[in-house]
Image (tube, rainbow over all chains, first blue to last red; front, side, top):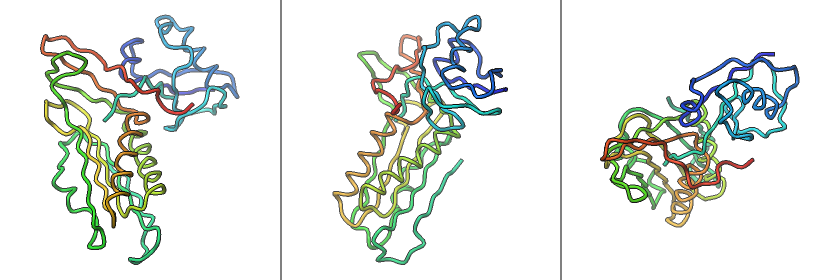
Length: 80
Length: 161
């Protein structure tokens, strides 16, 4: 199944790309999706367990994903 | 963009009437407009404004750029305001966070709380700013006086996992 992945701030410059489409097995978890991303050339610098939002809500590593989900990799925040 | 939640169409005197308004914007924050918040029943109106300061970690800062995951940030900000409303006896909370390029002294965030009594307003405002620092998907890049720039690495532990 296909997911879209958004990158922000420090992560976006690390890769560097603002977004990418990712193909994972049906029923894959957030942790698996991140592992797939880290296998891509240039993505090794991503943390093993970054904070991830799924469809604009904070997620857990074992959360199951669905086709079309929007993942966002959230670097340490610095608002305010 | 604007996310407005109105839990209260209830008449005055309802024990839990609080409405919240959360906004992420590229436009300058008009802090004076927030001073109209609340009603005649609110004896307290508290306005917190966070501004861009000219130094950080011993370096001289020339300006800042805030980047947000705007769609999520607005939703998360509204969730924070609702939590503050649930914890504190306040009537209305409005919060705005700015994005884009900001000069020294410009408002980056503003939180207005109206309440019948001051203690609840202080409590709610403090809760909102602390949660913004922990959870709002917003990042800042500092441009320094020496011409270099860098993403600010937050001191917070980040959102709950």
